[in-house]
Every structure is written in structure tokens, then in C-alpha cells.
Image (cartoon, rainbow, N blue to C red; front, side, top):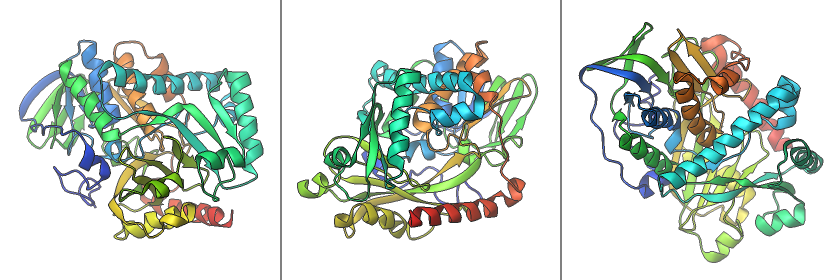
Length: 434
């Protein structure tokens, strides 16, 4: 099975709300013949495009290769949430890595959100960024944990932007009986991810980066310089950056056991009435909930509910995307159980066992980053800057991320999928039982 073509066509974006409302991005030619550059980047998502932009800003000659269209993968299909922190809370990181490393990771994660906001402003990217993400729980027992987390972040990290929400306060913002407590993170936010990525790509081009589409890489020769080959081109480069995340396959064999592709699904309803929308959210916030198979949602500019819910773990998307997304949406918002979706789509992201990003340096001059585990809008954007710094000789942040111990998925590449399915089935059952 070919993960790049099994769920879509080369040259065509998925039939998503984002693709339907994006500012058009002109198709780019495939590379041909012999080429020479300072840095060859593989992957046209957040990691690759951000790397291209930051390297080009520094004066490097950059060539980027995207197998399909810019933003065709997870970067153009996700929930659009720009979340603070890593995938794991800071107290968990302190326990795993120690307080000093946890604080350094918080600094990196804070820089990621700040960078997204700064790039939007610097390049006048029209992606409708809105501040505020609610983290909502359907378990009453989480109230104490959230209170402790808000206190820890205020006392130990100087964070004053997180507000604890009891049931009454939460219900005033999120009028559903499904959730009982939560917190509001005012530093986080949400945006139109495909328009954001297109804005980064235009900025990269403006600084001199050369971007190619329909440029699937078939071989990387590890040498100095390295050689990257597509069907019709051969690129020699002093450095290679690989930012393909869940679509990596065996491109870099050493990374394959550590980054697992999984599929997530989103539906976007017809335009809601004012009354229907008022029973979803009363402010322009996004929401992510406490379920292991997470639900995440927000209202769009044109008053639709964009709802992400449900996952699967084979390469092929299931046929009944409507039912997969409608089931959790109706659980949270019963009044919308029969409202039709105008758009529904799936996407493939990369997760790790630790839920921490996977950064590695191979053969000295090949740098990889992926496995953002649902935190990719901010962290993958930052990874481009971190990689550019590392290539320029300022590797402190890259080395910090690469120093985090990675755990390969049990069973190796061959057996990791059935074992993951067993584990996720258990967690899904736990969600249903509360």
C-alpha cells in the first residue's frame, strides 16, 4: 500500500473546508535534471516550509521537494489549533525528564506559539488567527487535576494566561452538558491551517527558496554532499532536511520504528443558525477535550461547526467518514445530531510512543523532525527555525529535542500496527466507561 496515494490523488487537495476556502496557491513545477543547493528539504508541510523560509532568510540556497501539493498532508488538514506546551503536561515532563529539562521544553514550546503569531504578523498572513483554547473534561475527577495544573503553571512557570473553569463558567462558554470542568488557555489559539501554510510558502519563495511539487523522493544517498533523487531529478546538497512526519514510511529507516502514522477525521457542518451556534460556543474559542481519542472543534468564520473526532490505524481511510465524526459530535451536541456535513475528510499524522517530537541527526548532515502527536501547528513551525539554526551552527534547541529518549513502537515496523489497535481499543473502551 502506498500511503501517499491510497487516500487521494496526486495533484488534488482533499475535499475539505480548508481547501474550499483557501486563498489559491499556484501549482509548482516538478524538478528536472541535475541540481545543486546548500539544503534540500523533503516535505511541503509546516516543518519543511518553515525550514525553507528560515534557511532562505539566512541566505542559504534552498530546494524543497513536495511529493504532492504544498500543504496536501496533515499540515493542511488538521484542527488548526495552536496549543501551548508539549503534548504532555509540565508535571509529567518534570517526572520523566527532571525539572531543568522540563523548564527548557516549556521555553521551546512557548517560543513555538510566539513564532506562529510573529510570522502571521510579519508576513501579513490572512489565516484568521483567534486567541483562546478551552481544554474541557467530561470527567468530574479531572477538576482537581486542572486546578493543580493551573496553580503549578502560575507558581513554577510564571504563566498567568490559564484560567480554571468550574461547571458554571465552562457552561457559559461551552453550553453543553457533556463537559463538567475545564481551563481556558488565552495564549493558545486557532487558525486556518492551509492559508497559514500558504502564507509561509509565499514568504519562503520571497526570500529565494525554490519549491517543487509532484517531486516524490525515491532515494537519499548519505554522503557529503548528500544526493536526493526523484523520478526526474537529482539534487546534491550539503544538508538534507526531512519533514514528512506520518508520511515518511521507510525514507529514513532509522526513524520508522519511532514515528507511527495514524488517521484522524474532521467534518464541517452546513452553516448553523444563530440559535444552533449559540448552543455550541458563545466566544470565538476552540475546544480540545479530555478523551483519549480526542475531540476538538470550533466555529468557523461563516458559522459552521468544524468538528474533529475519531481515529483509525490502517493506511486506508474508512468509507463512512460521516458516521465516524457524527458519533462523537452528537454525543457532545445532541441538537446537531442530524445536521448535515458539507465537508468531511481524513488526514494522516505522526505520533510517537512518548507523545514527544522525534528529532534526529543522521550521518551528520541529514536532519529529521516529526512525530508531533497532534501539536504540529506550533511545534512543526518552530522545528523549521530550530533546524535552520542547527545547520547554521546554533544547535542548542535541536540538541535538546534530539536528546529526548525515543521508544520504538512494540513489534517493530511490521507488528506495531496490530499492537497499537489493541491498545487504542482499550483506551476507547475506557472513554466510553468514563
